[in-house]
Amino acid sequence: MLRRRSARRNAIDFVAYTTPRWSPGPIHRAICEQIDRVRRKEIDRLLLLCPPQHGKSQISSRRAPALFLADDPTEDIIQVSASAELAEGFGHDVRNCVRSEEFQRLFPKVTLSEDSSARGRWHTNHGGSYYAVGVGGQLYGRGGMAIIDDPFGTWEDAQSELQRNKVWEWYTGTLYNRVRPGKPIIVIQHRMHEDDLVGRLLAQQACGGDRWEVIELPAHIDNPPWPQRYDGAALARIRQNMDRRQWAALYMQNPTPEDGTFFKREQFELFDPSKVPACHKYQTGDFAVTEDGGDWTEIATHGYLNEDLYLAIEGWRGRTTADVWIEQLIDQAERQNPFAFFGESGPIRRAIEPFLTRRMQERSVFVPCEWLTRGKDKPTEARPLQAMAGLKRIKIADTEYGNNLLSQLLKFPAGKHDDAVDMAVLMAKAVHEAHPAIVKPKQAPPPPKWSAKQTINEMIQQHSRKRRGGEW
Image 1 (cartoon, rainbow, N blue to C red):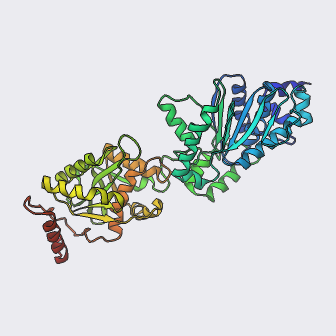
Image 2: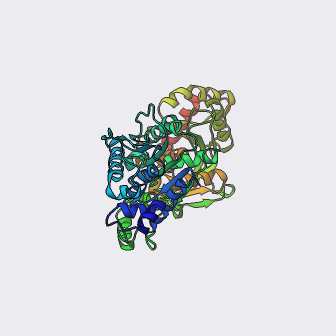
């Protein structure tokens, strides 16, 4: 009798009563405490961030819905997962739980309606309902509270910006407006990307959106969250046999570890741009054409001397139209007088090159523009920069712009923004491919001074003659 009384009141005891041979750990007690807070209507927005295979779904998706229906058998529950098949699997388990002898001992007045047989769509005898749906599925005529368990099916899905956008657009455009006023939303997942569903919900919160109760339950090796199944040795073995970035995201709930993964903080040296040694200077740029949103345009000047790369001696970033950042590029070139500008070939080059050339002529500021072909796989394209960083050949300006570049490097490739990384990768790519515009003297000569009377073509011809003659 005491066990039944406690199982009606507390989620942890309910799960234990209805789950034979279940051995809860600290992580399960923490999850159940939050489920009980939702039941008491203390919170209506809950983020549960848990490591894989630690029993989060057993509580939140296989038992909590039955408990919510026991509290209020008129409740309507929408169960969401990455696929309809997985969501329906949860529905099958919840339905069987409601049918079980253990549940009926606790709540004899709550049963399934006579016509409920589908595992993903059924009703209670009081008119409540359970509806399972995959991300992207239809919710016509459905409403109530929502439980979202793992919105991304695989790690690769979460790394895809297209897939992340699909999940977000379905959440904001379809699911959210089906949640009735005052009804809770519970999201259970392990982090997979800085910009995954949880990342976007937290970013929305910072801008005045829903206030979320965030419960992070990392898998610390010295303090395992479920030692009965994954003790310290088991967790250490997992960490040693998986990618460092995946461990940080999936198990530590930190998709962007502070010391970096692809690039590491100790690989970079900061420098004072006012004291940079005399060196060859080059510009690179990563362009975006959207104003006040989307990606950033990044333009920076770098130095190269004796195999060392001095990134972001001067830098500019903004979300503006092309006419604004073209002027910024030329302003920077006029101040820094670089040997060449490296950009990415493609549609943006074809769109802006005529205007860029005309503005250089009009302003009498001439820089040879070299356009590099870049592949679609960003981590592969960033390997030359990674190799130089590993050899301690990369130095970054200790400025606001330089620190933003460093932050993006440490978050790459899981960061929400990587435009500054793309800009820096172009410089390393030019060095790695021994582009003709890259020169490597022991001592840097004074930079070229282009006459205002020269045309662009004359300047390029002179640049080519000097390059072939070995003067630079």
